[in-house]
Length: 342
Ligand SMILES: O=C(O)CCC(=O)C(=O)O
Ligand SMILES: [Fe+2]
Image (cartoon, rainbow, N blue to C red):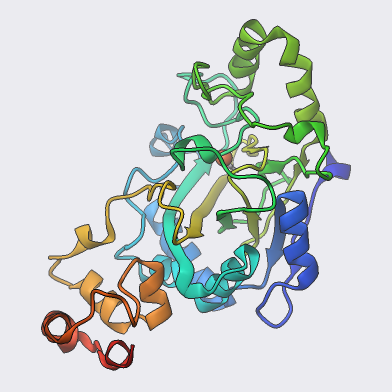
């Protein structure tokens, strides 16, 4: 395994280099660090560490599936989670990868969760068990359609690691794409448990046994995906940027480890077939702390766009809506000037 491990490459000057952008576009991923301020990452890692049970405790054993179950999603009472989701450096990087403006991005996933190592690989329910994942692509439960041809990506997915790897284990494994004729990326991308009529099985062993029964002629084709996988070894603040059509999987952690990660996805504004994976942002209104209202009022125009708030120049804006939106948010610092100029 050691010779296949990938380490994060530094980002210089808070922006992805042309080479890093090209790596994401050609290979389907780039693994970087230093894009976000260290203090913000550490603040979020500490808050997440408080939220999730310590490893090797009975409470930790309940965590055998993906995600926070809504407990730590955007917008959150954990302000670091919101700040990371809308951080200008991050938005700029996403826009560069998709070759659009920041205002043309939409946030569609922001979920911070914990994965725990365990002594035995055997799972309570092999079907959904997340310990040693089958090789997969993420599009089936993110979009209603299929990603477009490779040169027209519509979304960037990201895993921000908020723990250091223990014994180099537990990093996400990816299959780097090697050009337009790469057999691993044969078109369409449908040869995986969960797609079409194939049942969804998360865990590698049972998933591949099932796949080999259903598609015996493709079983060895799937094995080559595992043979070609490269696994990241991660430190706090490292981030894996990948795509809905990148082959990848989660791998088992060291038995006593707890891995905290923040998964985010940004899509192009026009790609409405990509679902937002959480309750609507507005669903967090009405809280006594007015967290959502303050967030909207103090965000930049670009950050608001990423949440779907009408841009300057939108048909939405007229004298009446300007006055009404000010009446809702003005006391929290909302300034309607940019929308008047549009
Ligand atoms: O946990 C990981 O490293 C990857 C998770 C993943 O790919 C997924 O659940 O879709
Ligand atoms: Fe995935």
